Length: 310
Image 1 (cartoon, one colour):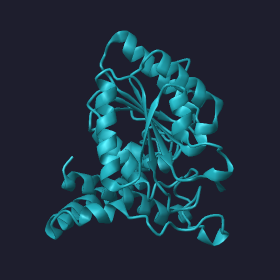
Image 2: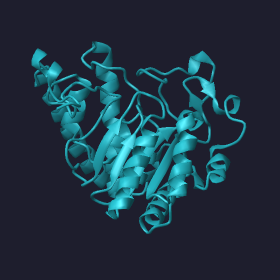
Image 3: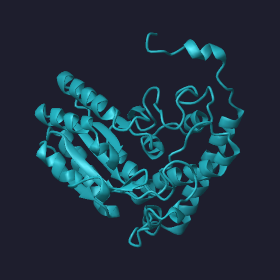
């Protein structure tokens, strides 16, 4: 992606989430809300490194991943509203997103889950199927640093390494599992534990390092280099769940060295181009929220439709 494309992707996610935060107190968004504000670059960097047909799984904090993967913005907002036109017909909400059919980027966004780490083994199973079928597809699984403490994390990485599966694990490390800092939860870093299971890990923090590492690892996995893990240091700016700020609680402080990726890339493109991109994105966001507002809620017949048994 060139700087203009990166700026558009980051700005689109940031402004969509900011508008969600503005609307949320009205109760028109009918689900819990885990904001990705501040963490957008991880999703943009990884999804921009993928190719049509590749598959993405994510965690409950997945707004950035859904949008970065090319998910339809109207169906995204409608899903948050609990409307029938949502990407999951209003049945999933913020924490259970999926995209029916290929996204605008040609990717497959196959699901998110509110259960911590639960989609890591699912993604591994999908990657195993791709290897058996020799499809050449790369599978990506996003999850947080807290998920790297679950048993299925270790089991999944071991299985992926044993069978040399084409999967890229992406840890969005914001330093906290809800309110508990990583230093109070983990005796070692995530990288050493992954390496012990046979999965090479790269840890990235700076803007260019994140973009470069995502591209390099996706290429390595695609070329048959076995599973890899990318740990991205990615602080969240909002509270764990909700749209407020929680600095006053005292369990964390703002990182004085953190640099906003939206501002970093904005400085690399002409001001006029910034304005044109922003205007186009703002129109798209306005249309998406108007679409959600006008869409119908699911009827009672939806209770027995689109079930697993169907």
